[in-house]
Image 1 (tube, rainbow, N blue to C red):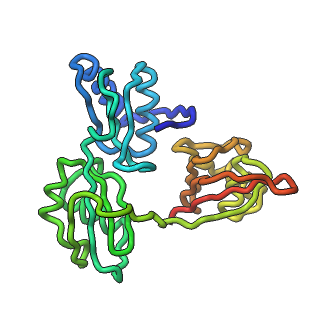
Image 2: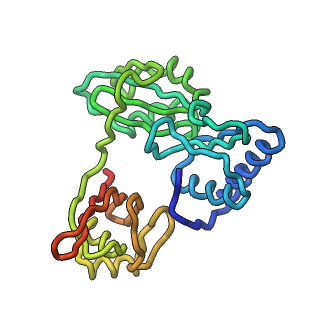
Length: 258
């Protein structure tokens, strides 16, 4: 897992979190054992990466149970361990139900949280038609298997593992267009359908959260994979950057999360 060079000033609560990361590093070094965090969100993963780099810890991996997971567990390993993914304490659970029922991510998360477990033991939840896969810490999978038979009022069956391809998360709107440059104001203009002038004024006055950091710089250059949270408009990801038009404009695709 890699991030663009990003510094985030931690809050007081996050300083406690970083102290826990340092403890994990010390235990791995002193006892020669591997250590795992709970599921981390994207901001926590960036904070942890910065901390690991400062502590000169190089044998670590983030993994959420599948490629491109959003919520991931940090694993720190002794030098003699090279294969990491199979060691992570993650178990996928597959929920099946009738296709006509339109269950949402919120429905599944609510049902799992009602078991009085913490949010950080639950990773990504991929919702499909008639089938949903949730990635959880293996310590809570027996509880879910024994206790969950309904999501809301809808009956479901739950089994360990993934029986076929992962559901494709289509919980977003695709926005395609061209921009004159990859400046923040240009991308925000396309995403929000504001004029570039209005987008610039918005950024200067209200700011945009770029990769979990407040940004007021209209000229900030974006790269593929950058995530924007725009107050009043929603969350977006610059999902792809294509070629140029004959007039020199750049083709881009943006995901707007629903």
